[in-house]
Amino acid sequence: MKKLRFLATPYLVWMVVFIVVPLLMVAYFAFTDKNGQFTLENVANAGQYTNIFVRSIWLAIIATIVCLIIAYPLAFMLSRMKKHHQGTMLMIVMLPMWMNFLLRTRAWVTLLGNTGVINTLLGFIGLEPIKMLNTEGAVVLGMVYNYLPYMILPLYSVMVKIDQSVLEAADDLGCNYMTKLFRVIVPLSLPGITSGITMVFVPAISTFIISRMLGGGSNLLIGDLIEMQFLGNAYNPQLGAAISLVLMVIILLIMTIMNQFDPDDQVLM
Image 1 (cartoon, rainbow, N blue to C red):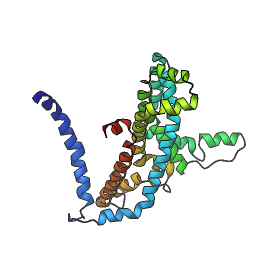
Image 2 (cartoon, rainbow, N blue to C red):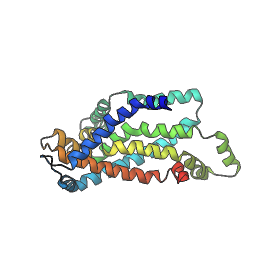
Image 3 (spheres, rainbow, N blue to C red):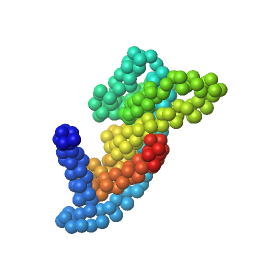
């Protein structure tokens, strides 16, 4: 046991230095003023940005739902393929992740711009340009494109473990496709659904690069607001820490609600 505890020491040190200490620093700045005196003013001032919190949550929810709708059938098809085909398809799914995040997002600026590739093609067939860039739709599109693999992989890892004989048994018992989907496949893949939702929603709600490049200044999200407090002209790390703390609380509450749908947690309860 002592040897095992010794092996865990590097991990514990890593957690303290890169998780516990930053969290304590955020809490310290959130509840102190510029003179280091305790105050609740920073947290209270975070309330004036409720509309930005609501917009960030709403767009993150939409992006997560779209990712789930796209990823679920795709992950199921991947899990039913032959083993050597699965590896190839998984590599294709992960291929965009090998490219720099900024470059992937910047590519959509070229595609969606008023003089971009898509509008240029529309002009060739006699259609008027469509405003796609600097809209909420463009922000959601960027989130879906960048975070879709994080939804596919957890779903695939769970679905590949569903024995084909279980699906065949459902067919033998007279289940149609919809009954088999909602009474067999979805319950068995629920852990992958909750994991995928978590892995997509958390980075989506706190993103700032996607909203800045594809949303423009009119689609400010909470990640942009936090960045402005630390790097912008309105330098206010105390307020930025308070907003970050509120965001962490919101994410924890949402994740707690999501965990209620985890069958493993329900069994333990």
